[in-house]
Image (cartoon, rainbow, N blue to C red; front, side, top):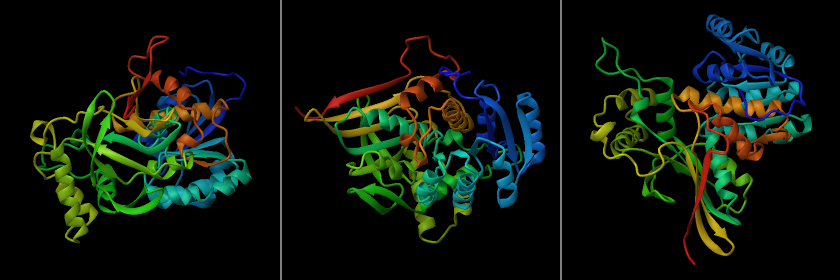
Amino acid sequence: MTSSTSGQSAPKRVLVTGGAGEMGAYACGVLAKADEIAKVVVADRDEEKATKLAAGLGPKATPLALDISDSEALARALADVDIVLNCAGPFYRFGREVLSAAIAAGTDYLDICDDWEPTLEMLELDDAARAAGVTAVIGMGASPGTSNLLAVLAMDECDAVDRVYTSWRASAAHFPRPTADQEFPEATAAIEHWVHNCTEPIKIWRDGGLVDAHALEELTLAYPGWGEDAVWVCGHPEPLTLPRIRPEVRESLNVMSARRGLMNGISGIAERVRAGELNVRQASDELLRQPNLSGKAAGRSPSLPSNIFAIAEGTKDGTRVRVGAQALVQPEGNMGEMTGIPLAVATLMAARGQVSKPGVHGPEGAIDPKIFFNDLAQFADEPPAPGVAVYEVVTDVLDS
């Protein structure tokens, strides 16, 4: 089910590492139904889960027991496909490793990496990918991914860009719930990952270059037509890749919007981690024991768009402007849907020859956002009627 088909490219064979996981499974589900795809290899360390998922996806899906730390097995798997989607983390261990193997095999690559450290490591492979004729798109999920492409739409309205912000909503609604025999839930890998991002040193783009920083710096951000509210800096890849296409950018940040109670909770936990009182695992469990993380007890809902959005500030025709961009029609639901489906949409674009730019890129460096958002909208619960806008780009004039 796609909105754009060319009929010019032969259907592609796709390998999905971590294919039986939450993110990979949604991507596999989309690809297995698409005319652009000849074969989907659901590769996972858990052979039973891979086999069960593949069986439910139809004749195009094939399971494969694969441990990506086995370099020889990974090389064999990559030799038989046209595109690999890397959904197997942690990316600080396996991001560069799988990308290097894809380059050696001449296989195009996409992933959902949302860590800044492996992003910088994988960007170092740009020359090698260009030499091999391999197109690699890193961080093609929700944030990063959808967020980067919204940033392109906002920046394209500016002659020159001073600042670009990508934002996503942090919510305690995504926290696990305790089982009947638990007083408090156990922290998931996703919670640990968030706590890691909020407590470890990060890199951001400020004053025209990469600088060291800590997450959770509080700022005030204004979105045209919505007003302004507090946001908190996060350690994500978007700030590191967006300036590659707009080198004039002086500040690039990824931020979280949230109810203040949740951010007070994580900020207090972060201070204890930085003081050496807690490690990340302990901090994750402790966070889930904090009161007032959600609902009215956590404060009012932010007066900013409720999902992912981007803001660019700069000049247009000599006038200072602030431009906001958000998707109006897109898949909603859990993290797996919001990450795996954008990855699959970008993969289908690649299969049609619409993502073909050798080198290692953030999404903004290789993907046409207008095609992407029109295709993404087709996977919403209620796909739009023809002619209905699927994204918005709105501008405030800051001076005359």
